[in-house]
Image 1 (cartoon, rainbow, N blue to C red):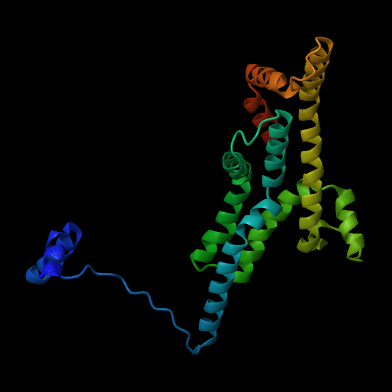
Image 2 (image 1 turned 45 degrees about the horizontal axis):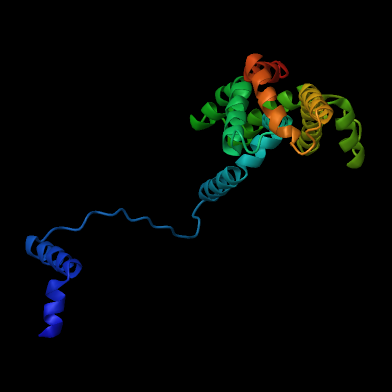
Length: 255
């Protein structure tokens, strides 16, 4: 009886009992939950085998999508320039890294929009409508990306990877393998991004040197120069509309 009184005085237990009794008395049907079934069976035709391979290939592409975006588009140059800008302004995670990467990603989509439009019209839509095969769609999708990468790949970097692969000198761009073009393109983008970052650093380094020299001449050695230089850097950056200028120059560098 004592245990029974404790149970009846416990509000949590009473609520649970009322819910159970109410559901039983009202005969409430449980909510419909969709059932997902995955199975492995023997393929009955070559078409089923091909469809399975296409699904696996699609999942592989989705898993490698971040790497593909970074290695074959304008993303590498943009995100490195933004990181150089963050270091030049002596800012600690400001703007946050997620914001920087998101801005770089959307600027990449803006710059790559003409290339993606060609891929959609010449490869994706015809394949979805059944007008071309998967192999033909893949070839048509790679060609616009190769044209974009060739446009911003230095001959010196391309020759480097051709020599390392001990490949014959190609006569045309079509003769250059894609697995050689991609690392050459990435190397060229890294050099271009570092050159832009160096140009960004120069004016801010001058500000740091002026502030440090002024503090030393005033005998304020214990005061960190960064505390004084950062506001001046931000003031100058805002006055010249720095984000507008950097975005404009980045987009202009791909035209």
